[in-house]
Length: 299
Ligand SMILES: [Zn+2]
Image (cartoon, rainbow, N blue to C red; front, top):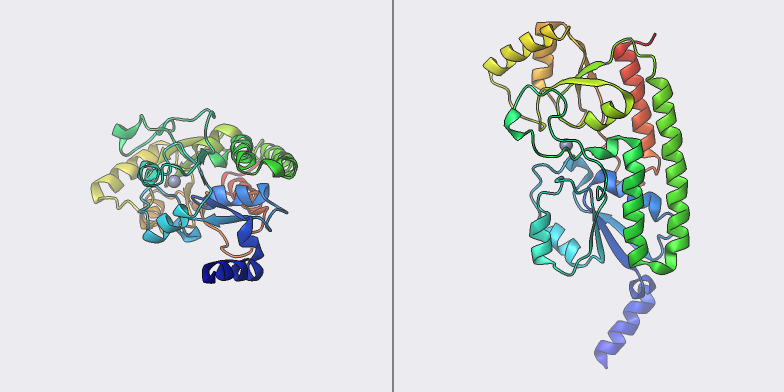
């Protein structure tokens, strides 16, 4: 009786507990997509992001106790896939009944190292996980996520589909803006510091002629730096693009030694934690476009 009373009280105080579904996303880009797809459904779908927005890419991510706890109470786990969540087997082993949707499912992927790579050539066979940076692939990812949400919440199919259509048309506009903006660049060669941009480069006809660090934060030895200086000079000193998430001291050294300029491109793996603007991805992609136009010149 006491228990029943407590339950009734809980339902009175937290009426949403009775019918709310909890969706957990693995990291920032998937979170932003999912917030767009569940717009207007906040009263019965709770969307929580697992890795703190400051975590960035999940390449070296270590699962926290709090993550497993959040996932054990989840009804659906939405992930990037393509190897971004290397910890996924650990989760499916611990929570075999938790449905998982991989946004990258069925989408053409680039191999790691499809761009010319200076370091770590031995890892060329892995796929590159940063597919959300191509807006046309981002649309396909949103479709996969929407399908997973509809399976969980069939009664919300109409709303989720309408949100998907809205997002698809916004991303299609974005794609055209990028296409127009980057059409007449004076140069098209770039050097990046983390292998996040090959999909973007493929979509807009840029050449990632070298990737300095395959994963962020690698410390380069003096020998590697010297080799890179030679390489960059031989490539005609293309601009260097670091990422705002990672301080890269080697970029300053390389710039000093070669005369290549240093710029910042944002792979959108971090962002505001509160009141995430639903158009955050579009806004940052356009900032990246403007940076590229400034760095590479436009005819
Ligand atoms: Zn990454």
